[in-house]
Length: 240
Image (tube, rainbow, N blue to C red; front, side):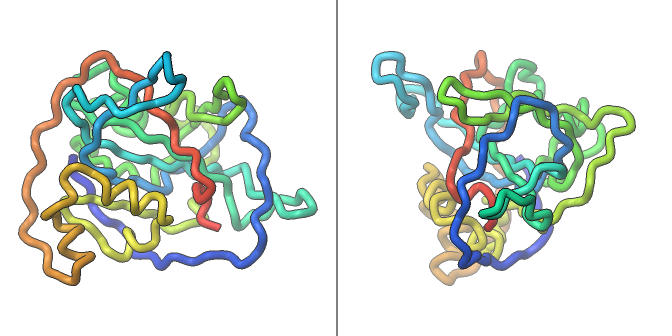
């Protein structure tokens, strides 16, 4: 998976109290990709029907995980009076394993093809998807939480506003420390928990060292039947 850092940012936190936001309604929304974050190699999360929760499938080969964040260009964070704060668009993220593009049933293939069908423009480079417009359909889980149902290219004539926030791309083979440090703590912890963190360029940067020459990542394997992975639903999904 080739990613390229596109813009450096600094982490900022608002001192204003967080207002609980209503779940996004089931519908289709114009969006742009705000973040493409390489999470590294992890054991895949699978649903345990007995425990009624997702658990790590340590008996199966680990997979490279990716987090993609969508910025909704017509939905905004509401203030305490219920008014839209138009400088604060809603965000929603999802995580999924990245498989070879000939894995037709893989979520990663379906998502990538929404931006670059057949990899004719970007050659499978997820980093180049950042900032691209799309149409995102929202569905709800059994608990009522919003999740990404589908991602497609914008419908003909659909106007998609530009991003309100700087694009963030993190490629662990060439990590940008400014981008990493701008991420919320829970996401930094997730990235540092990946199975290849020890001895990685990111570990070296965090320790104040230099980054070695880029090494090519292993060729992506063809996916088995894709198992759904929990969408990201963290309090810090929006950058405010």
